Image (cartoon, rainbow, N blue to C red; front, side, top):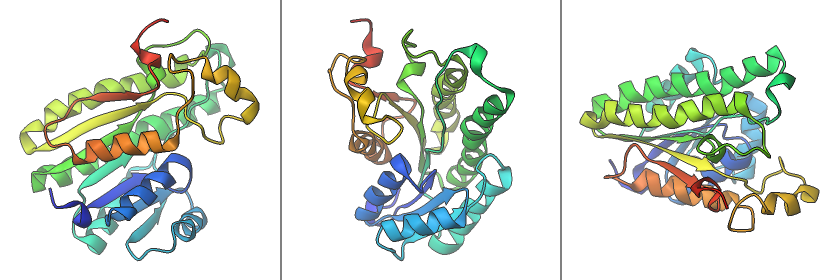
Amino acid sequence: MSTASQHTVIITGASSGMGLALARAFLARGSNVVGNARTTERLQQAWHALGSPDNFLGVAGDIALPETAQQLFAQATARFGAVDVLVNNAGIFNPKPITQYSSDEIDALINTNLRGFVYPAQQAARHMSERKRGSIINITASLAMQPNVNVPASVPLLIKGGLNHATKALAIELAAHNVQVNAVAPGIIDTPLHTPETHEFLKTMQPAGHIGHVDDIVAAVLYLADARFVTGVVLPVDGGMSAGKW
């Protein structure tokens, strides 16, 4: 793979939260970043928030559609020549008892979390296999490694757990092409998803006794993007939540 300053990185769900933080981190390294979000407006806002860099390219579209993934790779290669890293970050997580999910909510989980992984991964596998180098990093969920009775989430965990196993399977499939496939499985991270009044309870859900920061996820992704002899790993970043019962 080329040096970090020459990397081109595709990040799905790049307009806010973890995706925006990842975009900022890769740009700080000198990488080219191709970010996806549903709308051009959201990507414009992200571009301004990142300081309007010349090496950020926004590609709007629903990541659940195969044509969006095709456009991501087509525009990335047209602008920057090749793609070195794909971060499948786009995702939704709405925990609740299985009886409370509507059909629309189930469809949204399947579209964003499952199709939003499969179609970009297909494009990355073709592109990176031809180049004999590349890295695919999936953002999954620590709870999919060890469910917790305090957070009922069987429907989203059905998909996130599947992505953990798909990460390993795809790593084996692409290993002969020198393509690494890994995942980061976040625990409870301090984002706007969790309001301040919930933080004291959330601190009790991992042995570390505190919740994580977006920078913790960024550091894990950057490590996996650089790793050359690490593939098929699901890396929990969760303060010990998935290590066992405590």
